Image 1 (cartoon, rainbow, N blue to C red):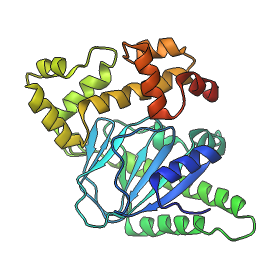
Image 2: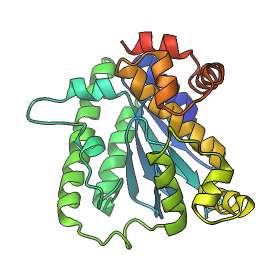
Image 3: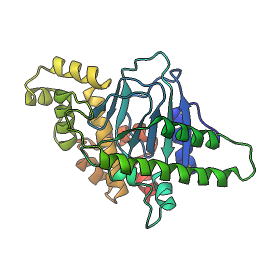
Length: 287
């Protein structure tokens, strides 16, 4: 399997193959703005950074930290400290992960069974980091006979390894919410309110009034904390919810209404631009 040098390329390769793809990234690729996609994602930090926003949770991260990001979870990398930000990102097609699982071993566990007090992050020991690098190195081989079979076997071993660590660390770690992960309390309240009220009128003026802030101050602190604007975040969350509704069998009109779009033509245009295909085609593809 060829290791990609672009996160976008890895995501597209994953979606096209309906299996998985890996990318080894440096600071030469600008971090993507707050985004969502149909893949699960494993993000491993080699050089460290400062802050990661996953859904409505903020995380500081250091070398050796690994994040599990589930399908449809919005995420954004911001405030990178080092000149070179080296990381490995694995994009995994959810159905492929489920097909690889058995009744006794759920390889999807690290994405879907996290406790809210534990969150998305685990920190690998030096030995665990070496083993993770070993798997990535083995996946990077692209010349051997039967490489597709070997890649599948390596992937299964790696996911079993990571789930074992996840289960062990999540059972051991009991950290107060104020300490892990780090929070920006005010922004976290705003994000939570948005996520719980997507069908409401989330105009900046209304949000500002709800939180007793001026519109300009609200926009500034949100952009400073998340790296994106309020309107872009709201749109991303609504498109995420629309995808879920369409996958579950809702009609395009129902998805439009239930995810908070008040204008049908605007929903069609926004969804198509964000996803690459129309809501109708997306629903047909998912079924």
